[in-house]
Every structure is written in C-alpha cells, then in structure tokens.
Image 1 (cartoon, one colour):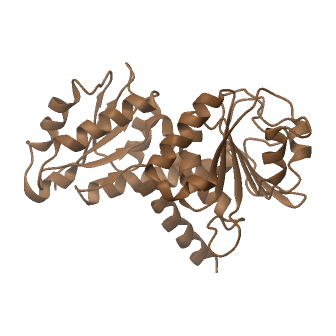
Image 2 (cartoon, rainbow, N blue to C red):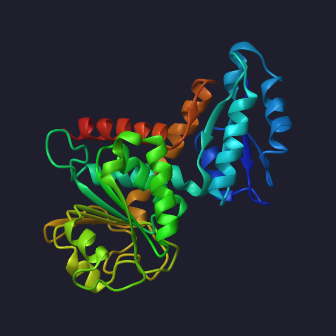
Image 3 (cartoon, one colour):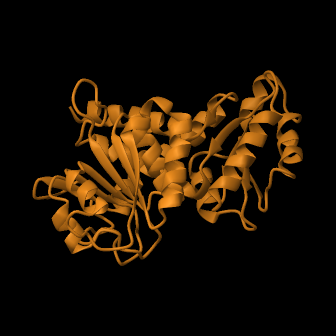
Length: 306
C-alpha cells in the first residue's frame, strides 16, 4: 500500500509545527514541509505531487495550505487550484492560522443553542468582535451563510466595511443582513455598538490574543445573548468572565464557550478533513466545506447521544 504523503505548504518562513503534528495524528505517513511558499514558487511544488503518482494512486498524495497571512494563503490556494487539470489533481485543505477550522467549530457550537437560519422567523442576530481578523472574517462568513444577521465589529470601520463587502461578494443575497460597526472601547447608551450588543443572540470574540473586547459593561449590555464564545485562549479573556476551558457552561439564560471549549470540535474537524483529502483527490476544502464536515460530526454526536 502506498504511503500517504501530505505536502505542507506554509506561507510563513517556518512551517507550522502545530499543523504538522495534527497531520501526523490524522494519519499522514510522510510529511513534506515547505516554508516561504508564494504564488510565484508554489506551482513547481504542486507539480512534484501531481506527476509522481498516477490514476487512483494520486489520492495518496494531498496538500495542506497554511500560514499566518490569510490573504497570501488564499492567493496560494487559488494558484494551486489553477494548476490542476482534468483528473490530475490532489486533495487540498486550506486552513491558514487555523482560521477555517476554528471558525467552523465556533459556528457549530453556536448552532447547538440558537437556530441561525432565519427561515420564516426573524434571523438570529450575531455580533463578531474582532471581525476583521483571520478567524473573525470566517466566523462572520459562516454565520451569514447560515442565514443570521451578522454585525462585523472592528476598531476600523473601513476594514469592517471591507470584510462585509467580501462576504457580500460571495453571498450577495445576504447583503441586507450584514453590517459593520466601529468600536474603540466603551458601550455608551445610544451608540451603535451598544445597540448591536443589546440585540445580539450570539456574540463571538475573535480578536488578538490578550485583548478584552467585551468587558463587564459590555456583558451587562448583552442581556439578550444566548451564546457567548471567546476564541482567545491567552489571558486576559476576550470576553470578561469566560475561561478558556468553558464548554456550554450555563450563565443565566446564556451558555458560554472558551477557546478550549470549542477546540475539541476544531481538532475533530481538522483531522476529519485530513482524512477527506486522502479519500478523494478532487477534494478542495475551504471554510464552507470544513463547516459542512463540522455539521456532519455534530449530527453524528447527537445521534450517538440519543
């Protein structure tokens, strides 16, 4: 039997050790790690995987694309997609900074407690704090895809508007349920941030490590929130009062999750995705596909719990 070879294409100078360990734990037999990958040098690396095995054997070679600069990683992913032709292609997983798997896990967690899809009822209202970062952008995109009304919050209104614009480009039918709000701290009555926080059913903090985005005053304003998720694992908490290990901890009428509380689901999605790209060489897994894997895992979890 051919060994499963994973080609790790990282846009940072040093390939991620985290991604390497997860790949091995997920079943990769051989890991070929490349750092400093760009749109200009990636094609020859991909060709090396495409032309060494043929037919069904191609499925035993796959590609993981990572790195801390999500825009660069996405450009590399697009170049990789363009390099394939006909059946000569490799399974690909795109997860720069763990943004896609983390965002998928967060939205899966929120969906356990709130019906996100609007259907015939009013859309659930979600606020993404730190919504212009790599994880925040994906959380906002996936929440919008589910039909929620999503507010992207950032210190820069221009950057928040850009994120909303990119989501609208992908999901034009959802334009009326997306908005951008600027926030520099404080939740003064009558302000835009106070309004969206007070109306939110779901609040996700996806800011930089060590930045508190929702303090005690913000928590007090969030009286309608049913789910609060803090994706920052480094003290101080991104949402005051939430510990990294919190997992569906009841707090009044709401439930709260910390970074480690959604981390288990993230890891399951990541490992399942590695298995998927080895199972089918036409797999190309981005945020939406990873979320679909998370939904499937969630259905299996619910079924086994019955």
